[in-house]
Image 1 (tube, rainbow, N blue to C red):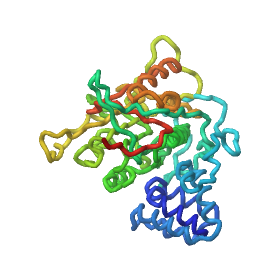
Image 2 (cartoon, rainbow, N blue to C red; image 1 turned 30 degrees about the horizontal axis):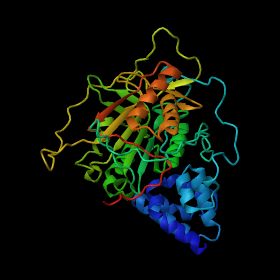
Image 3 (cartoon, rainbow, N blue to C red; image 1 turned 90 degrees about the horizontal axis):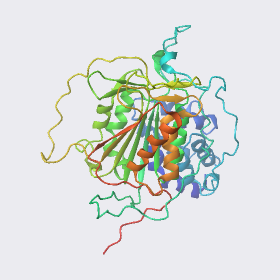
Image 4 (spheres, rainbow, N blue to C red; image 1 turned 90 degrees about the vertical axis):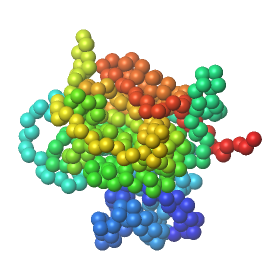
Length: 437
C-alpha cells in the first residue's frame, strides 16, 4: 500500500472505527479478496469488544497489499458510507456526481406496490420459520451503492444569529464538527417473531445520503440485538465523534407498539426483545451524557405507536402499504425506578431534545415496500429542499403538511424537551471557528 493511502486511513481512523458496521465491512473485504476465510476469524472473536475488533480490522487493511486501499474505498461506497469514501479518496467519483455509476433495475417486485403489515400478520404462516441467530440476506435490500436521486440545496449564509425581536436564541452550528447522524434500523427479526420490514433499507440509504450532503458524519447500526443496542448507547460518552458534534440526529426505525395508559412506546430489536423509547432516550440526558448538555439532539422515531388506523371517509390505499407495527397490545407500563439524583438539583435532567414521531400516539405508521416509509420519504424531500434556509421546527412543520397533502391518512408530531432555540443545519457551508471581538 502506498504511503499516501496509509496516511489517508490513519487520518480517518477514528471515523472508520466509529461509523462502520464490523460484520458488513468484514464480509465486503472478504468478498473482495482483501482477507482470507481464515484471517477473518479474528474479527469474529466475541471475547473482544466490537470497537477493538474494528480497530484491528483497519490496521490490518494497511498491510494487505497495493490493492487493499481501493478495495476498502469500494467496500465503503457499496455499503453506503459515502462520506468515508470521499474522505479517504479525493479522486472518488462521489465528489463529482450524484448519479449511480451503474444504475440497476430495482430488485423489489412491482406487483402489489403496497402491503399492510397489520393485515399481513393476521395471515397463517405456511411453515414454521427457522431459528436465526443473525440477519439473513434480504432480497429486498436496495443496492447501497446507488446514490439517491435528489439534490440537497446548499445554504449561502448562516442563519444562527439570535432573534432579538422575539427573544429566541439559536444553536451555534458553525463548529468544525457540525453534526452526526446515528441510524438504528431494524429490518429483520430472529426466530420469525416479526415480518421483515421491506423498504426500510431504502430509508436508510436516503438518510445517509441526505445527511452526508449536509456535512454530517453518519453511523449506522443495522439489525442490532437489544444488548448490542444498549452497548452502543452506553459507549456514547466515550465516542469522540458524538460528544464533539455540534448537533446530533438519531433515527430509530422498527416495528413499534403503544403502551396502555402511557405515551411511551416500545420498538423491537433484532433478537425479538422490546426496548422502550423512554429507556432509549435516557442515555442522552444530561446525567448520562453531560458532554452533550446544551447541544441540540433530534430524535426521529419511524415506528408504529399503536394499532389504530387513521382514515375517515376515504378508502385505504390498495397498493403495497405496510405498517411498522401490529395489533399488539402491551401491558401497562411498569413503574419506573427513580432517576439518579442530579448533580445539581436545579439543573434539568433533559434539555435540548426534539423528538419527531412518524405518527401520533395509538396509531400505525405506513411504509412502502419499494420507496420506503411515507414519513422518511417526506423528511428527506423537505430537508433537501428547505434546510438551507429554515430551522428544524419549521422543517418538521412542512413535513407534516406534505405528509397530509400526499398521503392524507397519517399525522406526524413533535415533542420538545427543553428545545428552546432555533436550529439551522446550513447544508453546504463549511463550519468556521467563532470570530473574536
